[in-house]
Image (cartoon, rainbow, N blue to C red; front, top):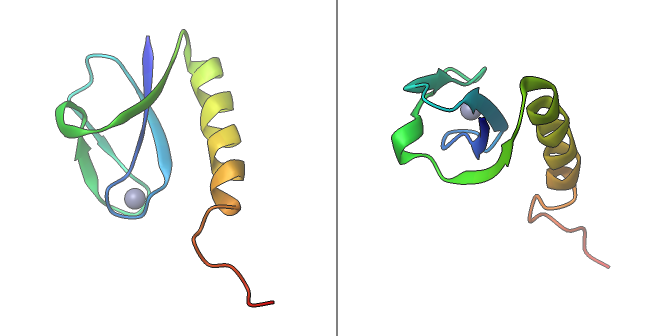
Length: 69
Ligand SMILES: [Zn+2]
């Protein structure tokens, strides 16, 4: 089982195999999985990767920065 969660530093979506203690984000922040908010779960690494990609695409529309007008 893989867990999908967000980096507390940059908000990037990450995944790690269940039971992993920490995951280091490409931004350099180390996330303790015990304290991470799990967004989703996946059966295997391929599914986890697909989920993360989908979430990243979604996140692009939810930056909270909407142009005026
Ligand atoms: Zn990060």
